[in-house]
Length: 116
Image (cartoon, rainbow, N blue to C red; front, side, top):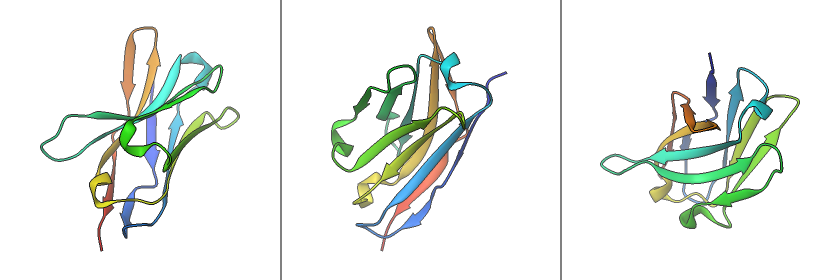
């Protein structure tokens, strides 16, 4: 059974930084891609960033380009999301996602709140 465990969320002031971590229960090479999505209250879940587990190629949502960076650690079976220059509109529950064939797996989510 696939397990994705997120950590690193919390409260941060505008302009601050946070790093989210997602640990997978097995090798990340068993997935085609891994990424981060977020959902704010009253809004739909949206793509934040995705990374190919094999090539390392990355894609980002328009609202986070230039501020967020996704990375992977093959040895630790983990992916990370480095978030810089955080804005109040980045406040949301962030979910780790892993894709295998046409199946999506999700973590339990971690809250990120950007507020002064």
